[in-house]
Length: 286
Image (cartoon, rainbow, N blue to C red; front, side, top):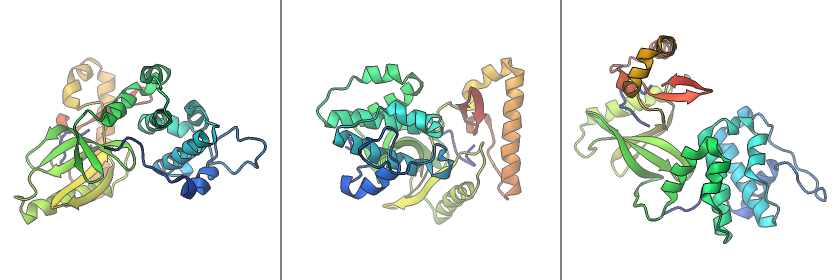
C-alpha cells in the first residue's frame, strides 16, 4: 500500500534496439529452435530470477526483431513457455505479445488484433490497454518518458495518473504534486521524503516505487500500477467472505509491521489507500 498515497493504479513501438548493436545481447538470449546450421549460443536460464524482468524483456524484444528480420520468427507463445516467470507477469507478457503484433504491422502485414486477444485471453485486458495507448488517434499528454493516459486519484497534496512509460513500454501509476509552482519547500521535501521512504522498502504488500524525479519544476514519482481497485470499492465482497477478510487483514498487518520496523509510519491508513490485485487467484493487498 502506498504510504500517504491516494489510490493509484507518438511512439508506435516498444523501445527501439538497433539491430547491429543488439546482436550480441540478442544471441545471448537466443530462443529455442535455433537453426542447426549455426552454433547455438547460450540461452538465458528458464528461471528469470537471475535477471531483472525489464532487462530480460528488452533482450527478448531484440531477439524477436532479429528473428523476424532473418525470416525465422519464433511464435511469442514459445517465449512464454520458455520463461514461466515472464508468463506469470501479465504486464510483461502482454508487452512481449504486443511487440510481436507491432513488428508484423511494421513489416506491412495486417495482423488481426482480435485474434491476438482470443489466443492470449489471459492477457486480454493488458493487451487492450497497450493498444489503446498506441492508438495514434488518442490524444496523449507527454511528461518526460511518460504518456499520461488518465487521472485515477487526487488527494490534498498530490494527483495520480495512469501512465505509460515509453522507454520500457509498461503501464505505471505516476504521482505528482498538485501544483509544484505553488508548493512550498516543505511540501516538496515531504513529497520526496514519502517517495524515498517507500522506495527503501521491499515487501510483497507494499507498492514498489520505480522512479523519483523532477522535470521542469514538476516533482513526481512512478510506481507499480495496481489494477484491482481499492478496498473501499470491494468492501461488500469482503463483508460476505469472512475468511477472505481475515486473510486480507493479516496481509495488511504484516505490511504495516514491516514498515514500522523500518521507521515508517503510515499516517493515512484507510480502505481507500489499500489497493487490491489478484495473484494466483488470491487477493493481494498493497
